Structures are given as C-alpha cells and as structure tokens.
Length: 109
Length: 109
DNA sequence: TTAACTATCTTGCTTTACATTATACATTAT
DNA sequence: ATAATGTATAATGTAAAGCAAGATAGTTAA
Image (cartoon, each protein chain N blue to C red):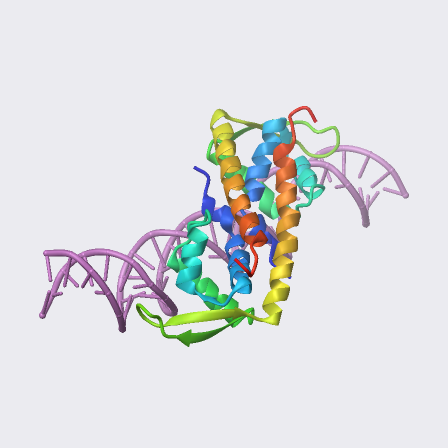
C-alpha cells in the first residue's frame, strides 16, 4: 500500500488552520473532525503541530474548563495565520492541479 | 510562504511512476517534464527517488547511449510498480477530496 | 475501584525532500 | 587549447513532519 502519511504531509497543517479559521476550537475536537473527514491523524501528530503553529504566531491559545474532562486549550487564528492559510490554499491548488494533470496524462502524448 | 516541499511529499513519487508508466524514459527527462508541469524538483530529490523505486522493484533500468552527453539510464514500470501506482492514485483522490472539502467549508457550518 | 472517555503533551524513530558536491561526456564560444 | 554551457547520474548530510508509544490527568458510570 502507498504510504498515506507521506501524501498527507503539509495538508494537515493547512486543514487545521482552516478549521481554526472557521471557528475557535480545541485540539481534541480538531482531531475528531479531521478523522471524520477522511484523515487519520493521531495525537502525536496534531498536538506538536498545534504547538508549532502557536510558536510561529499563526494561532493563539487560551485555556477554558470543559463540561466533561480536563481543561481545553482553545485556539483562534491570528492575522499572520490568515495570511499563512491563504498561502497554503494557493500552494495546494497549484500542486493538486499539477498532480491531477499528470495523473490524467496518457501513454499516447 | 508555505513550505511547498512538504505539500509535494509523496506526490513526486506517484507522478514519477505515472510518467514512467506512460513511456520508458530517463531521469533528466522526467526532471524537465515535472518542472515544466508546476513542480520544482531538483536532482537531489529525483535521483535518490528513482534509485528507491528501482530498489523496491517498482521500476527496472537499462543504460543507453545519448546522442548528446553521457549515457542515459532508462526506466520501465514493473507489474508491482503498476499496482503501486494504482494504490497511489486511490490514495491521492481520497486525500485531495478530503482537503478540498475542508478548504471549501465555511465559518457558518 | 476500575473502566471508558475526554484532553494534552513528550520522546524517539522513519521517511522524504533539499542543498551541496562530485563526476563525466558533448558542444560551442573565446 | 580551454572555458563555459548543457546533458546526465549519484552520494552525503540536514531538516521537517508524521507516527507509535507512552505519560499525565480530569470526569463519569458500572
């Protein structure tokens, strides 16, 4: 089988940023959302990613109590994060259209 | 700027396999083809990749004289390589549709 | 008190892309 | 001659990101 995790590279970062840009939310919720949308992401992938995004200034965090379980760390997207997301989207459309073009190419051309 | 090379991960392997599956060809030619189709791949990426694909039995190689310059190493796809390519294509369509779905999602949903 | 679910984080490993460098043949310009 | 350019392949070392595995901890229900 093809290594799915290599293909997902980079896309998790962009998609996570998009999810946070849609609404203020927290790690565990993002994890569940990604995995119910075709991804297969583990905690060992997402939490270091969120810390990285925060460290780079793309998102900012605050703690809030959960109605069930330990405190949640909520994230909101920053101005810089919005720009980074836009850059990701442009990058993604360029690359995905290149891949689609090559996959659609035929032996006779 | 978003790190394009992270997004290209895995796609270069699949696209290279597709190109070789279309016609028997050699490294330098694949490099030029990829870069004239939206990619920006260097020798340091492609040649190790070709050796890896060969080592894994997805492609097989033979040397042939070039009309201008040193000998070329031509590659053909193997049966196992065709299966691997098919697996890549399925994987790609799954992931790209997931990414497109998330990128299309809105703040209000 | 044990299990299950929620919630975050760390460590060490693997893979892949990239920069850089080396090698070498052929053609063209100086 | 020889220097530069284009063609052609390969090796080495580095960085980034995803993953497995495990640690920690609060809540709820059996």
